[in-house]
Length: 374
Image (cartoon, rainbow, N blue to C red; front, top):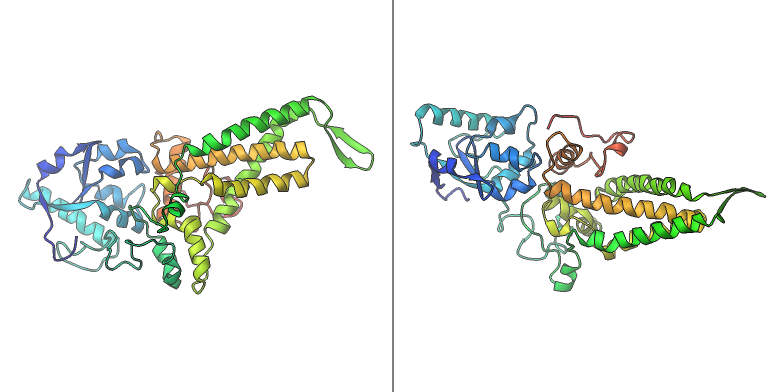
């Protein structure tokens, strides 16, 4: 909504009626937001947001226990639909909401004053004023942002991204979540069967030194499988931190573009469901490299046993990543904590919290997001 456009005025009763999964509205001071499309994405789950439907969420935004970040506030503004009518309800209730709204403005550091001063403080994408033209493919534009790219890409929006003008190239960047298990689980099952039956023959031995070797029993397969899974968790962390979150040089057009294609577009539009998992074609390059390195480092059957565990770890990683964006885990569960942790990575701590399936590797590398109740 532009500053020149009069806000839509809504009564308290009208706001209170929108308290279902099909239509959920909330208040932030005197500002009204339709968060229906955000229910599935909410880090605390749908139920938590529905409990506050039709009510003022200013205390929850400010905390405790969790003070929402500037990016979370900016994200909220995409659902802004109007203002609470000052003539609705009691004067005391309206004054309380205005006071809460003013406190929220002060908490965000906005120095502007006036009843509607924060209309565009955290506005949605302005197609005419944004640093890129959203009506054209973004892949060829982001490289020109230079030193502005890092700040721009870490200001998330809730809108689809078109990377390429060519329909085939664009389609190749999108993948439905179910293709990951459909493509890779048969490979996991086949290689698991192959490795176990090969080890069961009792002919596999590991050479330790000249003339010294030890037999590898079939019951070693689960240990090799878990070793591969553990190794993948380290690779997952390293790729996410050192590749996906590299800061491309401001003067290098191509590195900025590559970063945006690999991971920047995910941070710009974190709830684009078609780009939350790796396309199997792209993933096969990493999977194939992982397999070749292991089989050249270890005896073939041992390398394959470790590989299949790592591949299974990758499938679980992609499924968990999708769930962290679209699932509604039970409050207090392990997945609930992971979801809140990952959302904080997207909205507030982009240089920390690189673990997806667990926080394990964040600890030794000192990239743990500060502990906070969710």
